[in-house]
Length: 512
Ligand code: SF4
Ligand code: SF4
Image (tube, rainbow, N blue to C red; front, side, top):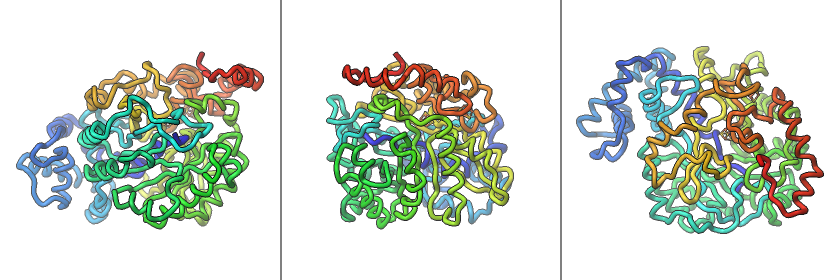
């Protein structure tokens, strides 16, 4: 599969705007009691009661059942109070809510408040984004693939089961769904899945290597089906790095064509690059190159040694190098061209960098997946609610057989498996699973992550901690504050050891 998926990026757009607006208004027993009454699915209107009531209040739905109408009055009260507190006008609010994505995000926030209260970090009523690896089949052989992709797996869900799973996610209040894999664009029914998810109101994304999108016509088919966001991976400034990484010649050219073609469809385009020793020196040039290509976002993926990526662990960059590249990326956002492209990172330390690098006239809410400017000082307080690593709060992943994990970068082991989409109740898993509950608690992080001033806006990458140290709550060895852990790992994994293991044909498993 692709080295990464549009992890925590898409949902960032709505979190900031909605959490704070409603905190003070709804975080009291009466509001929470009333909100509880709004949870659940309305058979008559064919959607969650909250979403139906919101759409009715916003005038996006002409009629609804009596219960949803009553609910809409309560929603109108909360919204009017929230708008007042944060100085948002009726027009501004309604304008923002024109996109159904925001309506679903708001419904999820309200469901989260009713279910969990307003906590730091905040937990929505359902993950904002689910990444679904719908197949292991792939047309490439990437050295850093987290999914160990290749051929279609025996236990992959059928078309009917996938459609059923999409209904479950939509009905439980998931905001955004990203199809990933393997290579999701080569799944024979991918257009049907995109259309179905889109019809159910989900914001639909696709993480692809771009190989299939050589011509505009192919991209248009995906746009027409309802695709709204595409992530295309490019690993280097030229074909040399990329094609050797991907194991397919011509891959770089086709990925670049895909970016340009998707730009022309009007779909939001993100270029993703996993930063390793292979391409570290190329990143500054890549920023310029991706900008020229016209992408909306450039996402620097954090390397995580899982799947095939475990076999190239020696190519992970040091904490100092990570910090250097994150600073460079953050600074680049404040050039004149800032409005054209945002540079982001899945490394949660990016929020720490954003917090510490102040620019006189720019006020930023530091998160690692979205750094919006703010004008209302109240909004800076929201950073602590957003909370860094999204595993357990904003994010979840699903495997081709329906098994669920906190994040695509967790290995497929029982210890970190949450359940199965078709066999378990999604809402109950989200609310009661012990690992998810623990991932929401920044106070149980170990070592420097546990006492770090940035633990609420960063918290370290829990997948890196688990893959390197066999402990979900261990310090993230990718941070300069955790150099002891990094040095220990690097000593243990000397290059010589690594080569020996490879010569013996063994797969690297750092945790054994
Ligand atoms: S574990 Fe957290 S920080 Fe790491 S990739 Fe997953 S969601 Fe992102
Ligand atoms: S010590 Fe942990 S929480 Fe603090 S910045 Fe580093 S990774 Fe983030």
